Image 1 (tube, one colour):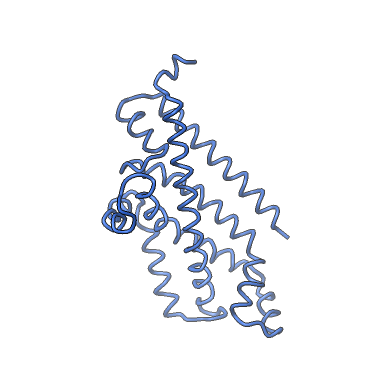
Image 2 (cartoon, rainbow, N blue to C red):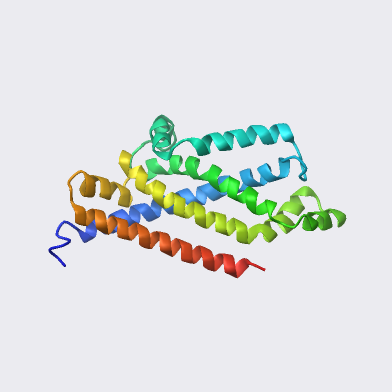
Length: 220
């Protein structure tokens, strides 16, 4: 086995895994922080909804769709000046997080909007009949009812971010993607490529298992 994986350095693999996990944790947290309220606003301001504002909804939806339509590799390159202004560098884990968030937050926002749209309209009507204000309806009725769908959306977003972190290796962001490109591709070290791909598959499977478990736990 050692001959098959002669180029694989455990220390480099461990550092790459840590970098990927760090990018994933930071970008997923911020994507949820920004994407959740955007998704709620998209839902509330849609025509026929609780706070219908067709004009504002159209503008926000256009911006979200615009960000979602940009391929992530291009987004990485375009955002380099802004990333340097925000975090002081466009390289490494820190330099990858801003474009990861910009790429994933709109995606998560749309999933949140979909999850909220699947809530029984009777729940909103009952809340309004009890005199609940819009903020109370969102926090005490809509989000609790939509929580399984929101968690499922967060799981899908996390898995998408794993592929994004791998693509971020193109611009030297670190992590498993960077290792696969620098060693597996540029140096033709196939064993390194195989190990990084297997680790990414394991990471995706773990995320899916945890996400499915959380969805089952909060479904009612």
